[in-house]
Length: 162
Image 1 (cartoon, rainbow, N blue to C red):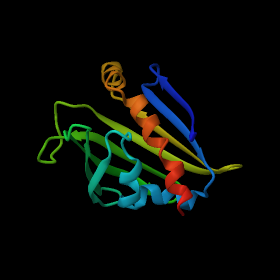
Image 2 (tube, rainbow, N blue to C red):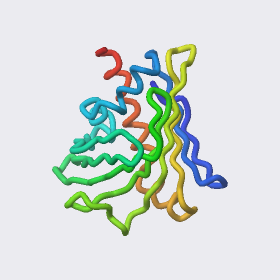
Image 3 (tube, one colour):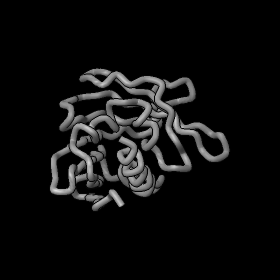
Image 4 (cartoon, rainbow, N blue to C red):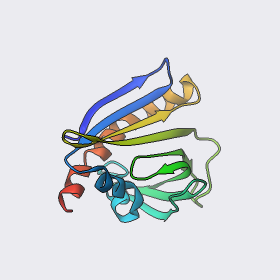
């Protein structure tokens, strides 16, 4: 299992998920920089993602949708704040309407990703930052922790193909 820990911290308004892989940081980085790899793990198995845009640079954007078991679609967007491959990136992460535009009724979080070398190969830490307690509670109640853990659990199989 790739997930080492998953820690919600209401005092600091963060959800931190730590994963370890038997691959070097450059290979783990490709999970973020290659949209075809990204869509194979972003989203839990029952809600696979399709990326329609990925402009991985500060100020660049990504657009995607996840397709549920009944064919329903849930859109999302990212706007990259920092990109320092193969070590780190951060982005604002939000929900999208059917036309792909940001949904102002839904929360936006800041995701911070750090990829470092480790004895096993690599350690990747994803920290989601929330604006307030209500936003954090809303997203955790929607299944964010379970969904992220399931999504990250798909990465070992992708890395094994390299």
